[in-house]
Length: 448
Image (cartoon, rainbow, N blue to C red; front, top):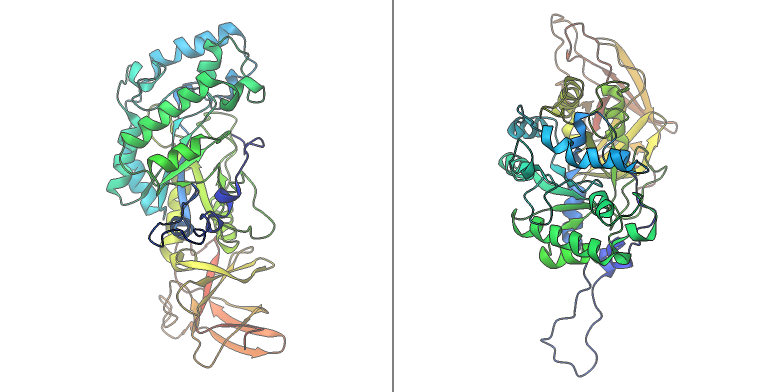
């Protein structure tokens, strides 16, 4: 999965506020509304930016092999391709698939939306389609997995998104082409049969599965995104209409909405061996930095071919859940601060209040010991209250003589905060993840 270099993004898609048609010329009836250029609606973009965190799910029939999703078909021999297309569907039977458990875990982790791979580049459809027999309906499992996933996440109140690839290696193979993503015949605009195939599948997805909030088009989006906006005008097209960097964050906040796509290990799909997982702390730090820069984080899971989320991934989701349970105010319902960070300290501000959150990454804070941080971009006011998020600052367990309330002083060098981590999260009192300092009634150093 790569951010497609060949996708041409229209000005209307990148800057939806500019997508509205011009006012009628003189003499035109005043009651006639101006035509609107297709694109993401500004109010829907604003809604998307409030979500903050989503679950990306990469899952297809080649998860049985633990191979890179779809891409092993590129440059493959004819016998490999034939085995891929004819043999893998015969053994795909996820007996332990329980989408409600996925959705419950996502909600617990603080995720607000899901993006599920309805069709990846291989062309294998994880939904009920009339366009091909290369689908989940023609496997021993024989049920519409996409429908089950969407319904489960809807039951948890999460927004619904689909991943769709315009590439279709199955179709290219049937047409007699070498499998690639860069030759002209791989582009729907150059391959009428492929374009018709993609449009038919998108019509199925956007008419048979209820309202779809988000669509991630991982490839050339011309004509396809316009069809999506025609079928469901409120849909937000992410990739194909906005920046969606993979495995890296921009050095500076991007103009407009954006979404970082991130794996827990190095693979998008389930990889049983030779995988290197990121630590929970690393993933939490990535989420913090994404929010401080004004973006959403789309964090990926790769389900086991039997249909469950692997323990290594579930554990990291639960670690993220614990951090969000304590610190959700600092990463949801927020906006970027005047500066993104001061070294390892990252900032957000409440969207509807003059509260600033200083998120201290880097070295863990020891339990029960005073620590001091100095903030240069934030100033307190006489009405300010300052404390570590999630704790009262009034008591220390088992130490009735200790009052761990944060204090502060302010001078030309900055805002000096003295605070103590008093809440016990783990049995051994150690806590490797960032702490958050909340500063109410805060101002920037240049605010009047």
